[in-house]
Image (cartoon, helix red, strand yellow):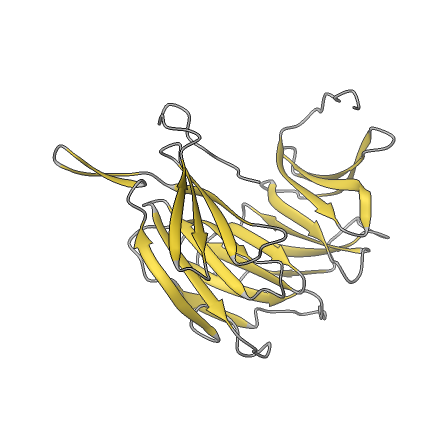
Length: 257
């Protein structure tokens, strides 16, 4: 194992590239996106934002010279890593501030604090890009996490701050027919019973903090809840299974891998 390296910033997100196994992107609290070389244990900044920090960044699977980054200011920017002094493109017409995102080639899906869901075709990026679809998720609870599956993006799921989980499945579709209401058929929408509990005077809502699809079984998604539980949803069996690894809300589950 490698020795750990002390960084001068807090890493807000980590992204690995399938074609660059020795390098990872780190979005830093210093408003920069850094590259970390696993072989050499070196870290240096690639590009920076003058305003609020980025919270997610990734390289295009098709063109490793292109990087995309979402900032807390509400913009999705595009960077050419061969000349990263300034961004070459950006999109900032979201309804609300981007809060969660998921990237699986070729699509990037972004949700905002106003529950707008936008799909971007990253693989076919052209300057002046815009979402290929915009939808609004109808819920009183804001979206906390969102994920698309790695199998050609056939599955989409999200979790809210109110413990609500929704899942969609889609068949064949074009880039003009994608999104929760365009090409995806909603399979389930329910509050997982372990994420919403009855308490005196009402209900206690635990957020769904993270979602991850199984890398080899794409019709299975794992959800991590603020009540400390991990729950699996099976798209084929249309059912939930609980994993009681964490039973105390003192230790809520955050990321799940």
